[in-house]
Length: 125
Image 1 (tube, rainbow, N blue to C red):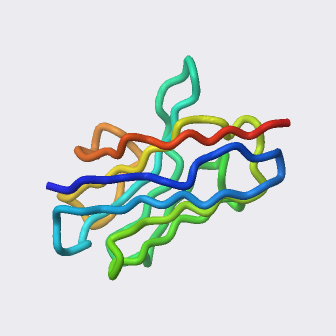
Image 2: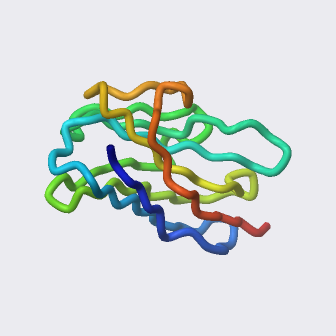
Image 3: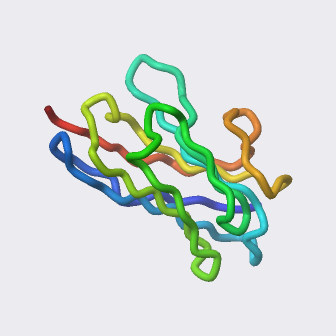
């Protein structure tokens, strides 16, 4: 099992930047895929990005491609989401997720058994 704790959310103006962190504990190795999802009020949870076990492969939703960057530091058991050029439509609760069964992540939320509690990101216009 693994426990995930997100941090780094907050309020930012449009065009600004934030960096989210997701710290994992409970499993000593980091040979598993991680992902970020988000959920805005009244909407379904949606895929944002995923990273494979060693950071060598990433995949992004079209809505964030070129603005967001996912990375990981396995020595620190932490995954990051750098968000630049933020837009009001990026406002949501952001969740990190882990799939311990795979080294390459999925875009489907139902493939991730482990989730953090979420961190709020609010982008003002």
